[in-house]
Length: 246
Image 1 (cartoon, rainbow, N blue to C red):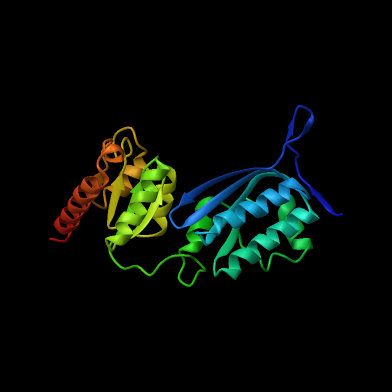
Image 2 (cartoon, one colour):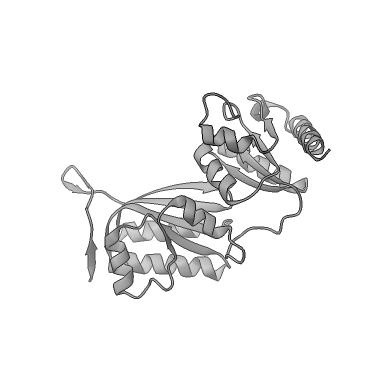
């Protein structure tokens, strides 16, 4: 079996297992890989994780910056993950690829099928290019960016606002919201508690928010009566958007 080596992370004298940290940046799912992608449970866990993401997402980025070891089986797993994404009309891109992995892709002539980017932001932006493979719905209304640290609240907002005719994208981090603001246009920002532009948030975020209306999602939203909270939120958003258009 071919083995391709970089710096191998170690713990208690032995190599670290593969860990996968996933987050959503708008319509894109970033899977941050840390450890080794090798035959056995590591390859199996990556394959199963991608299959889990593909249940309802179609745009995946594998962040490989903390991968220190890849064998031929691990490379095959990456190819199968890409194939699985494309079979459901999605795509999988790579970012922060270590030099030794790039050499592996070149040696294996796989650079023609894997699209690699030097950063998460550039990989996310690639999914927003016209004609890119993506799970993006056809925009049916004004575009709203929802920013909240509570994943359950974000899931609820996605369904609520899509049902109300908005084109919705979500983020759990200010840094990821900034990426989205750079690669696409929004008509309104819906920000959760502590995430509205203020003196404590990054200047770049404040500058980006200065260009669009911002609605603060109060801390009581997640514990309020769902129907009443939804109706109040939709009314507030419509008023802010109407005032912008006036």
